[in-house]
Length: 429
Image (cartoon, rainbow, N blue to C red; front, side, top):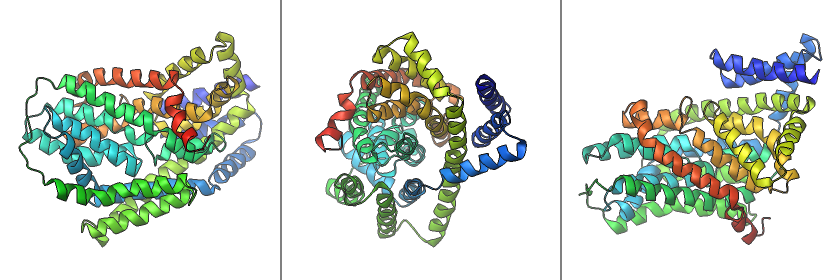
C-alpha cells in the first residue's frame, strides 16, 4: 500500500508538471490522488481541503505577505536607486566597475527586501541602461545580475528562510537570519572576484560624477531598515512577523519622503503584492498536504534508510543530498522545493548530528542556484528580460559563475561554523 501511495504521488506530480499544470495545483492534485488508495473520493477531497486550510492557520506565515509588500514598496519607492548610487561610490571607478556595483547593490537590496526576484528586477532595470550606454558586454552584465540577486535569499530578511523555519518544525528564525550573513557575503565577494577576472579586458570607467556626501546621506535611511528589522529580532524586541509589519511601515514612509510613491503607485504595489502572496501561500497550503501524505507513507524513513545505508558519513550524505537538490532546483522553484524536501531530508541530517540551522542555510544556498538555471529559473528569465538579451547568449557567460556558486556551496557544506558562528555569538544557539 505504501509503495502504491508513493508511486501515485510522485508519478502523478511529475506527469502534471510535464503537461504544464501549475506547481501548486500539481502538488495538491497529486496528494489527492494518493489519498484515493486509503479513502473514498469524497473523504480524500475533504481531508485535502482541511489540511490545506490548517496549514495556513499559522501566525508566522503573516511575515511572508508583509515582507513581499515591503520589497515591492522598496522597488517602487526609490530605495533601489539610492543603494545603487551608494554601491557605485565604492566600485564604480574600477575596470568593469558597474558589474561590481550590480553585485554590491543586489546584496544591499536583498538585505532589505529579502527577495531575489525583486532584486534582479529592480537593480537590473536600473543598471542595464547605464551599462549599455558605457559599452559593457550585456550578456555578462545580465549573468552577473542573475547570479548576484540570489544573495537576497540568504541575507535577511528572507521569505524562504521563514518558510524553512515553519516547515522544519520551528527552527529559530532569528538564528537562521543571522546564519545567512556570512554565506551571503561569501557569495557576494566570490562573485566580485570572478567578475573582476572576467572583466579584466574591459577598461571602461564610469565618467559620471557622484556627490559622495549626498549619496551617503540619501542611502542612510534605507540602510537603517536593516538595523531596525534585524536588530529588533535579535534583541527580542519583536518577532519576525512583527518586524515584517514594521518594514512595510518604514519603507512606505521612506518612499513618500523620497517623493517616489503616490496613491496610484501604492494601489498597484498592493495588487502586485497580493497576487505574489497568494501564490506563495497556496503553495504552502498544497505542499502541506503532500508532506502529510509522504509522512503517512513513510517516505522520510525510506529516504533516510537509503542514504544511511549508502554511507554513515555526515559529509557523504550531505554531498548526496546537495546533488539531489541541485538537480531538483533546475526544474522546481525554491518555494515548493523547500516545502516538499525539508520534511524528507531534515530528519536524515538531524540523525547525523547536523544542526538544522546549518542545514537550512545549505538548502537555501543550494536551491538559490536553481533560480539561475534553465528551464524554470525565475532570476534567469527576469535578468534576461530587463537586460533585453537572449537566454542562450547569457548561458555561456553564466557557466563560470555557476562554478563559483557551487564552490561557495561546498565551502558552506564543509565549514559549519561559517553558518553557525554568528548565531552562537548572539546567543541564538
